[in-house]
Length: 259
Image (cartoon, rainbow, N blue to C red; front, side, top):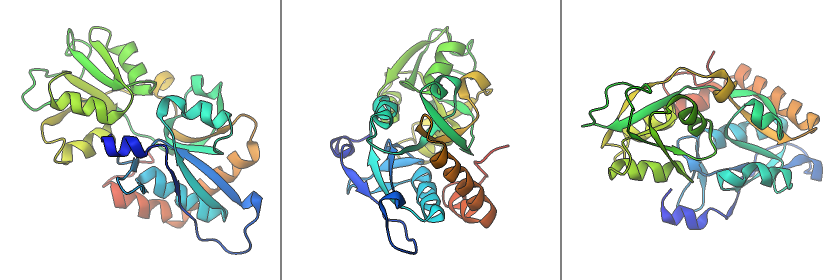
């Protein structure tokens, strides 16, 4: 992310969802997100949060008739912060994996997209495979399913890890890495931007169910079944009533919910 965003990352961003009736303590939730993963969640220079995760979270809060406040948190510390009760749920494109299920509980998925590889437009790399990346430097955001995928399936490449996606993108632009791995939507949206004009999508990667999990879900504290089920009901409701489709169309030209 940009330095201005980095300095603002600790800021709390409040977004009040419209709802009927009096507000009670039980009708308030604090949502944790990263704020550094466009187009899913991004903290703007003016302190506002934008992105698909954020809009979905607002729609879910409206559906549940609760007042939601958003807090940004560095990715490496986002699960510990949930466990420490700094917020009630994580809505931050977090993949549902067996490893994470040992620490938190998840809702059903709210989207599912595959990983992909991006390279400079003039790159000699022709295949999004381990053989194609043999001896190359592959950038990834640390503590993500994508870095785990690189470690497991791209062993012939040198994996270089970064605290945020913005930092690996900068190194790809400046030639300090040969390729990067991330969600296909994240990479595709970046490549459409002026900052990503340097580069191209090399290809998508086969989903590894063990590493990539079941899709992105909402994380809640272990045992918080009531909140998890409220989110599940709300996810189903916005899928059924067209709100999900409306938000999806704002960001993508295909259904990111997946099969």
